Length: 115
Image (cartoon, rainbow, N blue to C red; front, side, top):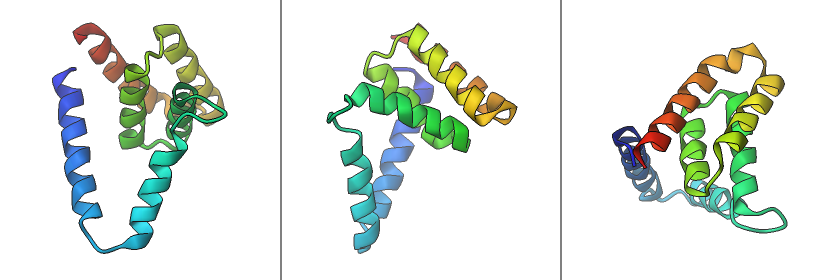
């Protein structure tokens, strides 16, 4: 795993632990739901991650994009699938998604060349 990916995952984990250590049942339930919806079901986890990545591109959330890029990579999304995900995100989200697609592609390239 690349250093960039390692840093992102470590920071996300640290912040999640900080949030979940608080006594807020609503946030804990939401985090639990977020984890649960990406498990295999009628759709497999890989498909769900691809959907999550498209949604994150359209919403232009760089943290969400990075998370779903990492998850997609770990679930063996191919380069061709990744490119189609970026295309769908661009068509749905418009040209404003281009900077986010650049960063997603940079992370994907970083992961692909260091594994």
